[in-house]
Image 1 (cartoon, helix red, strand yellow):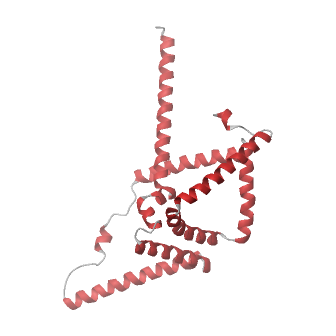
Image 2 (cartoon, one colour):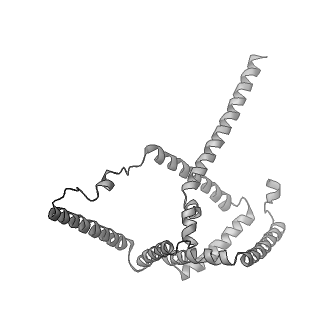
Image 3 (cartoon, one colour):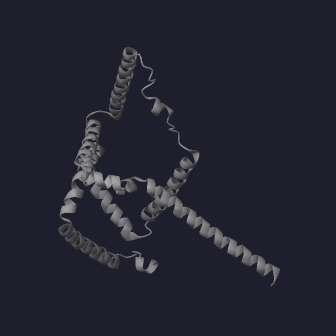
Amino acid sequence: MDPVTQSAQISSSQGFADGQNSATKESKLSDSFLSSSPVSLIQSPQAKDLIHWRDPKKSGVAFGLSLLMLLSLAAFSIISVVSYLLLALLCVTITFRIYKSVVQAVQKSNEGHPFKALIDKDVSIAPETFRKHVDASLTYINRALKQMSHLFLVEDLVDSLKLAVVMWLLTYVGAVFNGITILILADILLFTVPPIYEKNKTQIDQYIDLARTQVNNTIAKLQEKLPGAMKRSKTE
């Protein structure tokens, strides 16, 4: 075989292998990010048990604390809320520390520091773990930037129009609610909708399918009538 041809084949195979390795690495980083993202946390078994009220006591505590936190942020500044929380935590730990010291002095025991187990626990973040999450976040950021370019540079007219409609609707939402109010509503819905959906799954799914069919038909008609709309069937 000609040495030039053999060299070209080797370079081509190396380039293909590098491309596969790069794609595999990006896929792993994406999976790593998704596994640590809020969405994956909500989909975890523990979170599902909470929002479906499998254990009413745990769900009640989680719902009450999260709602109390959001209501506090709605009434006070975030600096005040954080300060009061840290002050309350300090009051509890200092009081417990003094109490244990008095008990040890009265009983003449030498149990040591009451928080020794927690103090000795390693809470540092491993460099490998930090780099892994940074790389995964970078992959997600790049995808978000690509999607923004797709929408704002009107690569697909229908997608850009849908974004414009959503932003227009959000202006009315913003005029009525602020960010904290929306978070409070989201917290209430998070703990109330799943059990309701679980009890009425069949009926709700029927209405969702009808609405999805209607929306898809409307979008298909828009894609046919709007000039310059890029058909996904062609790109695929």
